[in-house]
Length: 181
Image (cartoon, rainbow, N blue to C red; front, side, top):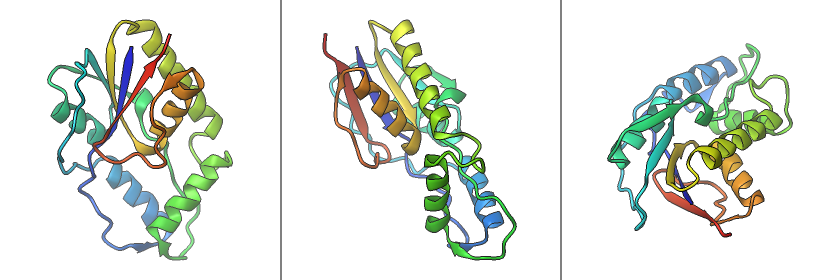
């Protein structure tokens, strides 16, 4: 069994202003979650993919439709780990700073985040269990998001799959993992 992961293509929506309040950051995250993508070149490998599973967020679903020739199975289980910043402060920070703080809050399982790190890891384990139980003899292509892909890949490596562990998954790039028996 081979499992290939692709992070969605680059998102077309950019923030109107890079310096924003927490409320503006949360609104930008919501817009980002419904944005279109810039279709890019996709370098596939020599494998024939038997099935494609994708996050049901538009940017991932659109990417999956563009790179896979058959029907795509959409699932909320592959959605990106949510991020937000609580409060209504007028403090303006660069949106990268808000992103870093929200990811740090997630990593520390701060209650301000909708999903804890432990919950994300459990969701990744459940998804890999699903693949191993239902697609044992198949080559599976998965289209998801950067932060959640890291959880999925970490789980595959923990289970003995072999493949490259990217520090930051690139948009539209294929990462392939195989389990040696």
